[in-house]
Image (cartoon, rainbow, N blue to C red; front, side):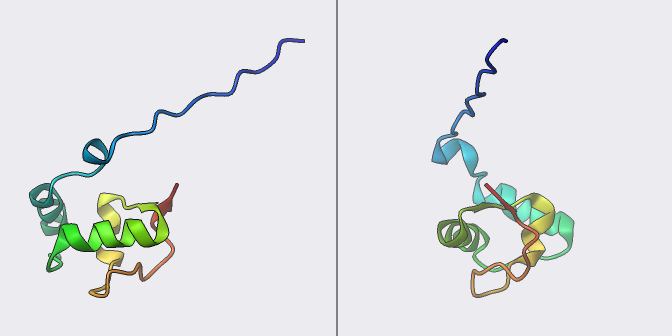
Amino acid sequence: MKRLRKRRRRVRSRAEAWPSSEKLSRLAHIQGTIIQGQYFLIKRVTRLSSAIIQPNELTNIDNTGYRRTKSAHIT
Protein backbone atom coordinates (compact mmCIF):
# COMPACT_ATOMS: atom_id res chain seq x y z
CA MET A 1 0.00 0.00 0.00
CA LYS A 2 1.39 3.31 -1.10
CA ARG A 3 2.05 5.74 1.73
CA LEU A 4 0.41 9.14 1.33
CA ARG A 5 2.87 11.95 1.29
CA LYS A 6 1.96 14.93 3.45
CA ARG A 7 1.54 18.08 1.44
CA ARG A 8 3.87 20.78 2.68
CA ARG A 9 2.29 24.18 2.72
CA ARG A 10 4.54 27.03 1.69
CA VAL A 11 4.75 29.61 4.43
CA ARG A 12 4.61 33.06 2.94
CA SER A 13 6.89 35.77 4.15
CA ARG A 14 5.36 38.67 6.05
CA ALA A 15 5.86 41.13 3.22
CA GLU A 16 4.32 38.76 0.71
CA ALA A 17 1.36 37.80 2.85
CA TRP A 18 0.22 41.32 3.71
CA PRO A 19 -1.02 43.71 1.05
CA SER A 20 0.03 47.32 1.34
CA SER A 21 -2.06 49.79 3.33
CA GLU A 22 -3.35 51.56 0.23
CA LYS A 23 -4.45 48.25 -1.26
CA LEU A 24 -6.28 47.48 1.97
CA SER A 25 -7.94 50.88 2.07
CA ARG A 26 -8.99 50.37 -1.55
CA LEU A 27 -10.54 47.02 -0.63
CA ALA A 28 -12.25 48.64 2.33
CA HIS A 29 -13.53 51.39 0.06
CA ILE A 30 -15.05 48.78 -2.24
CA GLN A 31 -16.72 47.30 0.84
CA GLY A 32 -18.16 50.70 1.59
CA THR A 33 -16.27 51.32 4.79
CA ILE A 34 -12.87 52.76 5.48
CA ILE A 35 -11.47 52.01 8.89
CA GLN A 36 -9.09 54.58 10.30
CA GLY A 37 -5.55 53.20 10.47
CA GLN A 38 -6.55 50.21 8.36
CA TYR A 39 -3.18 48.52 8.06
CA PHE A 40 -2.33 48.91 11.74
CA LEU A 41 -5.65 47.41 12.80
CA ILE A 42 -5.23 44.42 10.55
CA LYS A 43 -1.69 43.83 11.75
CA ARG A 44 -2.88 44.01 15.33
CA VAL A 45 -5.76 41.63 14.71
CA THR A 46 -3.50 39.11 13.05
CA ARG A 47 -0.97 39.31 15.85
CA LEU A 48 -3.67 38.70 18.45
CA SER A 49 -5.65 35.94 16.80
CA SER A 50 -3.32 34.69 14.04
CA ALA A 51 -6.05 35.19 11.48
CA ILE A 52 -5.75 36.02 7.83
CA ILE A 53 -8.47 38.46 7.02
CA GLN A 54 -10.17 38.14 3.68
CA PRO A 55 -11.08 41.37 1.86
CA ASN A 56 -14.79 40.88 2.49
CA GLU A 57 -14.12 40.55 6.21
CA LEU A 58 -12.53 43.95 6.67
CA THR A 59 -15.87 45.24 7.88
CA ASN A 60 -15.80 42.80 10.79
CA ILE A 61 -13.01 44.70 12.50
CA ASP A 62 -14.16 47.26 15.00
CA ASN A 63 -12.02 50.22 16.01
CA THR A 64 -10.38 48.37 18.90
CA GLY A 65 -8.54 46.13 16.46
CA TYR A 66 -10.28 42.99 17.62
CA ARG A 67 -12.43 40.89 15.37
CA ARG A 68 -16.11 41.41 16.03
CA THR A 69 -17.21 38.11 14.53
CA LYS A 70 -15.69 34.68 14.06
CA SER A 71 -16.00 34.88 10.30
CA ALA A 72 -12.34 35.71 9.65
CA HIS A 73 -10.44 32.73 8.29
CA ILE A 74 -8.10 31.43 10.97
CA THR A 75 -5.02 29.57 9.79
